[in-house]
Image (cartoon, rainbow, N blue to C red; front, side, top):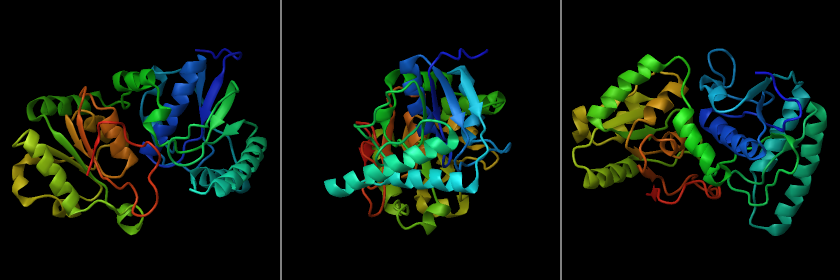
Length: 316
């Protein structure tokens, strides 16, 4: 469908992995729907790519939700460095009002610099999570940030994502898991290992957390089946009670990130890690009111993103 050039365009620069990209997509969609405009993906940042070298978010059929424009701009090393610097500034938030004011001024300078370099109006929030002062007053903008809060996502966009967001070319695979889910009524457990073990700030969840979470699930529904989502199956087994035995089903590594997340949506209860991936696995669940258990601490020492978890999620 040809784009109406008079329509507002809300774009976003994808950065990070699929969970991060979903926060960026959902925030842009919420603004785009509000303005009755088009959605653009500006591939200028450092994103985790799919098998085709494109942002992992494109493994979902986004065009079923919104008219989509892909703007694959070439960018120099200096431009990429400026974008990375702006993102880092955007992520920081201090308790001191003076420090925050200074950072805000510096962020505006970098935002103007990046906007000039890429020929787009680039806007960033303050902090990793909710920023009540973040406002979009122009009709042609590009968002750069993490947006790690449910408050950036409108109810209508959340509902539409739950109904329409599907991974590409995965119908047969997902159908198989749908049939299994009907029989097993599974609990999703996401055990994020690998890179999380080497980053002190992210190495939060442990065996005690999963044991307590499973104990809570069993108090609601004894004998539950568990689907385990992890990037290290051998090590993940050491994080789980030995007596679960055949009630554990480990998800195969052969699934793409988008397929894995779509399978996660089939579950009825969730034990997540401090990970945006399993956050979205729970948030877009097919179950109307799933039990979601999340770690009390999102980071080891840093303040967690403001308003990251919706009301009703249990923090252990």
